[in-house]
Image (cartoon, rainbow, N blue to C red; front, side):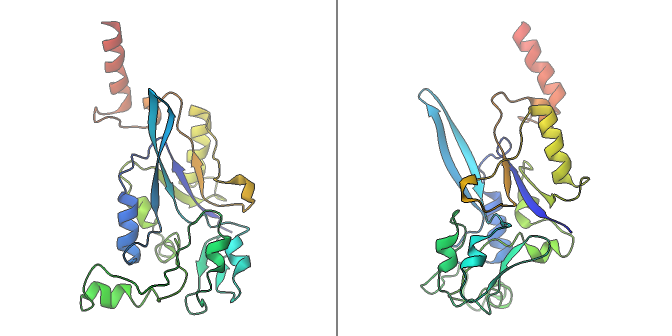
Amino acid sequence: MARYSMLIDLTRCIGCDACTLACKQENGTPVDTFFARVINVEVGEYPNVKRLYIPVLCNHCEDAPCLKSCPNKAIFRRADGIVLVDQDRCRGTGACVSACPYGNIVLNRAPDDWYLTADEPYERDFVKPRLHPGVARKCTYCAHRVDEGLDPACVVACPTHARIFGDLEDAESEISTYIVAQEQETGRKPFHLLPQAGTQPAGCYLGPMAKQEPSTLGQTDGLGEAPAAEARRQQEVTR
């Protein structure tokens, strides 16, 4: 059975928020509702300070606290590991919001605000029939796309391919082969946010490298293929 996961390579993320916009477009979320956020963090001490971008979304945990906390049994986990909210069963108690240690479930008590007017076809026909008011909402890994053999919208939109989605149980999948290659080439292994929560999340991350090796990123810095870019750098050093 498949075990879908989202791997985010923090070395590749440039904080462009293309994932955030693609998610809003695909899921038609109302104003101030985001399933794919990007947190900006400053790390280090002056003068050696860097900005790190950390994309966050539902981790589709194997031991999901939201699922166990819901009094209406509105949250369920599919056989492939994707955790979803049944909006017809949800009564908006907010227990799942309190239970999620990652803060990735949204519950709007106030009426939704929309970007377009009510008579716009996109809002009327696509968005509102899919998002019930007053219920819990979260990232679904774009399950409706996955069921069609497509990647989630945020994965498709990422210009640096910082997001790799696929089946961890398939050794030949892109995510599995990427994990193996990165451990061999850079020594990095996937890690989870808040491991002390014990939720066994599907979502995982690769940390930034202490020293960036261009050969691990393919095309870099607008200079063409990485080997050519590295050769030019070496020429500059020896001058």
